[in-house]
Image (tube, rainbow, N blue to C red):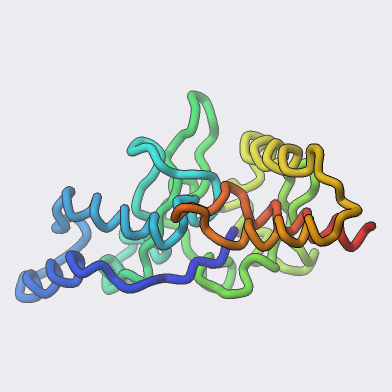
Length: 216
């Protein structure tokens, strides 16, 4: 999970809410589909085109959706349905046939603030440990929220472990780990967007590279 620094709310979203402010029981269903696509594009730009939870790349129409942190299906969170700070871009239902649900579609209507690690929390990246083979575990064994978040979002399914492991293997292949300056340069590049996009699983790659430096 990567910390997401939310940017300015899109003007089109603000304008639509202003136009509809007199509409009774205004909700997410009322929001036109074409405006939803515009909103999703803005969310993806904020996130550098990676999923808010697992960090895989999200580009194709079939592989992304608007995620409500506080679920829109729960009456108690009705006031957050159209709150930009509650909206993120998550990857789709499946990335390939037979792949288990994960991230937003796995989370569904679940939300417990004290048991959920949010990508809007500036320290969220420190709550998880990524092994060299791509597996994810809580960074601290007593961090119950990190453990529950992994399970509720399906962040530890085999497919994601394998994709993260492949990304880690790819970045380490041919890299001279004894060249600390080169490794630090690579880490710096992974922290920044390249042409508006973060590298998929960049946060896991950064963590592994930092650990390799310490172990040298």
